[in-house]
Image (cartoon, rainbow, N blue to C red; front, side, top):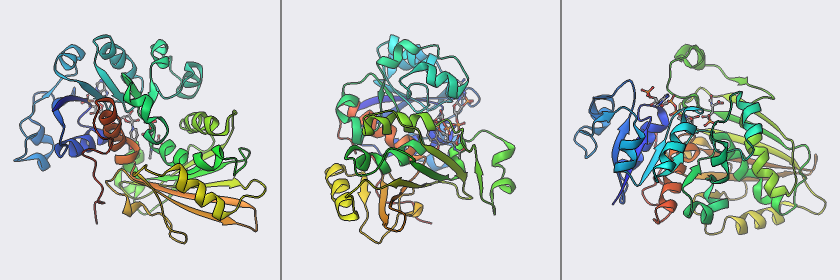
Length: 348
Ligand SMILES: NC(=O)C1=CN([C@@H]2O[C@H](COP(=O)(O)OP(=O)(O)OC[C@H]3O[C@@H](n4cnc5c(N)ncnc54)[C@H](OP(=O)(O)O)[C@@H]3O)[C@@H](O)[C@H]2O)C=CC1
Ligand SMILES: CC(=O)N[C@@H](CCC(=O)OP(=O)(O)O)C(=O)O
């Protein structure tokens, strides 16, 4: 058994990490932190833990020295800006870190500073951080001390377009990525924008042209394309708790057709069990991936406009955050990538 710690257990991604780790065969959650709930047993805030091995685990205040002394690896499920200082302290103490925030995802600290509007105080650590998308970087993740867990929207967008771009089957110009997320994507902290009456029975776009996940998607799809790219990425808030549905549009390269593109995706994702290319004619839905680590993909070509349309569905909390974080931790600790990850959807 490897011992793991979790900073930010009371947030939505902390809650999801707790759910996953409860059933993990080789990772034992030994330290959990929250500033506001310190001193409580975990079952007091999560009644679903009553009668389980995690029920009596006491929530403590975050302390990197205590975490490092006890844990082989620590998950940081805290807001960006907070994570960078803790990651540096934990790395200094020799502990492996999976950071769920955005602090180490962008390789260039100036890009981070311009999109997040805060100084990056630990830019020296950026060189050490590995971007935690296992389908692209599994080998590097396995040897990493610090993994930057991808953003939820970027996970859905990068997996949707990477193979076609890398194979030159679509143009890197004029990519359009249209994403919709459930409300847990905004975190558990109180805010008028996520009140029940503000989000139920309505559907709206937000942050058009300036969402902070834009540079992260451009960075990784730029690797696929082998050049810098600029794309349109826009977001919408769905009146559901969990799930992201992304629809991506790209101009087909000369000679590219659906048959070639499907063959390319099949080859690219062969052996990568958490990405499922759905049969032709079937499109992804958020309900079939809810609570799982799957990313479902559907491919359509439109000969009238000469475009490829890729639809991807993930669960923002599992594949888009905590499930992916556990996959990364598994790789870092020498375990099978999928150990402990849920594969059957949470049904209605
Ligand atoms: N929600 C999602 O779908 C996704 C979230 N993420 C990222 O994961 C991280 C966590 O997100 P989420 O769980 O939604 O956030 P929440 O707002 O729901 O929870 C944040 C957690 O962090 C703790 N926390 C806040 N500030 C500090 C601090 N200064 N020091 C220590 N602990 C702190 C809080 O507890 P307390 O205040 O009591 O200490 C709480 O437990 C964020 O960086 C987010 O952007 C990434 C992908 C998807
Ligand atoms: C619905 C909703 O509000 N989603 C969040 C997703 C951000 C997130 O969680 O990602 P980071 O880890 O990069 O902060 C948003 O659009 O900001």
